[in-house]
Length: 186
Image: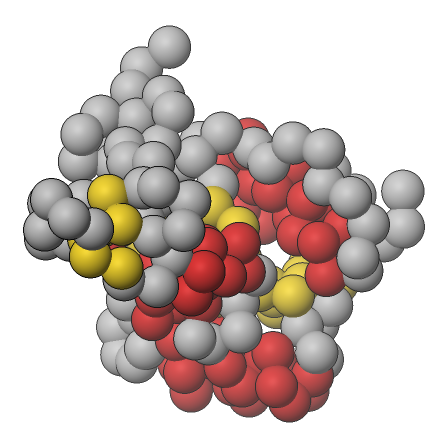
């Protein structure tokens, strides 16, 4: 496996430590761990990581700002982590490639980063880890499902999916998740 440098941006020290351990064990080079927006931007500039896992809500700061800078400044492939499932559009706008909704299993992160690297490099991703969302695909599907109102008065996209206040332009909840979008126990 090619060695990738990974920046971890997580303000919870226990999660950050767990991520660092599991990624190191999986053969990834950890180029830094940041707990705030300013620290993440400083480390990103100093290390120019190939991959990053970025928590959306940082204290202090905003993970979306970090993601945007890493993607546009250093061509870093970014995996966002969030507990707020309604943020997918704003996350896709940062240039991040994928999202791993919280709570997630730490052991899934190495596979998620492998899928992220494949996605960035244009290689086929045969299977995303459970509960991981391809933000490019969601953003593209959202654009493709432009609102078209049928005779019934219900908004439908070209794919035939119902869209509107009570309908999402992609299957919700994701397979294996509760109606709120959280992973269900196996």
